[in-house]
Length: 249
Image 1 (cartoon, one colour):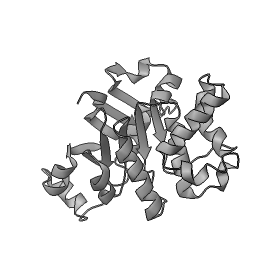
Image 2 (cartoon, rainbow, N blue to C red; image 1 turned 30 degrees about the vertical axis):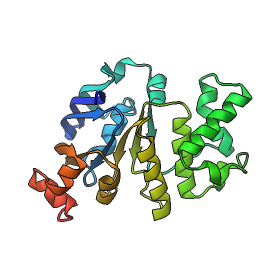
Image 3 (cartoon, one colour; image 1 turned 120 degrees about the vertical axis):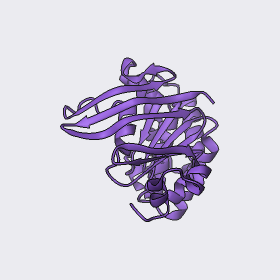
Image 4 (spheres, one colour; image 1 turned 30 degrees about the horizontal axis):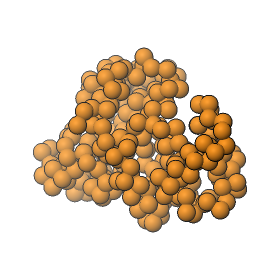
């Protein structure tokens, strides 16, 4: 499969410290890449670089390339990039307002005003996020009244409403119950034909369940990258074996 996103010799420093060390990592179109590793391994920074969210951090400096369809993301308009590459955080952040307005926010911002079209977009996004059946009768109530799992799926629907190409997910299930986690994982597996996912997770079992490819980060270094089956059953690096078996972490 062609590379949708490609990190090439990516190096990020914070003052005199190294956050990411010469990372080269391809992300194929239509796959789920899971990034695993202990805290402070640079996993979240990688997502933020891809979405151009570190540029206002004067303490961070990055070299190397981040390519979206072969184009360096720094050359793209930031708003357009963030439409094409959505980022979902560990803690869901619903916008003030109704469930409908949360999902319709992006399409309205990009010029969609016709009511019937907005209705269609909102329904399609909520269905894709496995939330429609739970909220279809209360679309005009506050999004803040949803449960934590529902709020996270609402954020996924809000991201999908603007037709992204890549969805970056930073520990999206970290605070959720097993049922909500299962619903989000099911959504990812069914949606990967339409989107490319990069999932940062500290849950090794989750990575094994949903990922096509897995990258193991340790102290800012990409230690190992391969298929989920290979990395979890026959890791090439002893450090990977130690991490996935629970001996370190």
